[in-house]
Image 1 (cartoon, one colour):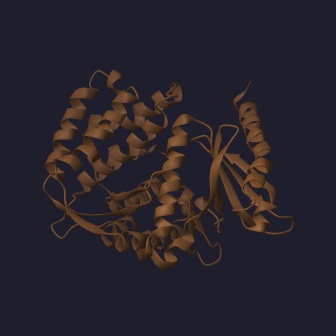
Image 2: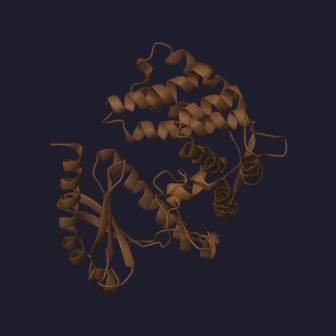
Image 3: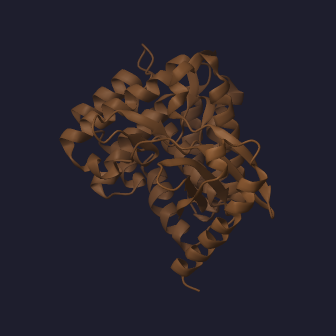
Length: 340
């Protein structure tokens, strides 16, 4: 069976469960949602089925998400908890209108599912290719997530335990995915660990809720005003991490979109010869949460951000690392460690 055929089969199986889900959740869902039909369905790169629901002639009203893998099920459960916590956080007020609200959750025929409210807007990924529009969209996106960072900020002194969480645990994720097969991985990882431990331990830092994968594909805009209408896919969220992660992802993943390079190639080049456009520097200086003493340095921001990003990808592929993942790992993990 070809990959395309397998994908269509999975989507068909998932869509066939929708009537059962809606019937079982009829009492907890709005009447219009309980009576809705499948308007669209897609399978994401992390094998999450997303089914959009609508009633005849009306705009979409809800989304059903179903993970197709064990790794996806873990991220799916984490996302559900994050969405509930964000909507319960009184500090955020009306800002949560941008975030999908869980309406129901459960399992049918051993398939976990969650029904979320539909967040309006469009992902304007293609518009980021236009330098003029890109600056406007990036500024709007940065200002929007900055509200979350400021509202949930907490100042703490980072000790060895947190350094272990941010550095050691993420290096261990790479090892478990098979990166330690590379003959120089352990020595390079040890060198990186020592540098980042020295940079983090003992500092008083500001942490907050972060989205964790804040790239243009997860942002929904009004096509007319370029206002952010919604932020989706919260499976990489964290209630206490560095706000700069969201801004680094916004800046560097946007660069990946219009340059065609892998993120690892961009990070490697930035480590060797740092170069930011005026718009990129303005975003980071204004919103990334650099401390008055200049911490983190751009180098350490790059490394901490990159390590979080690749460790997350490693966890997502821990049970299914194939040749595609190994090729990704060569460019995005080993090539960057070589440049450290």
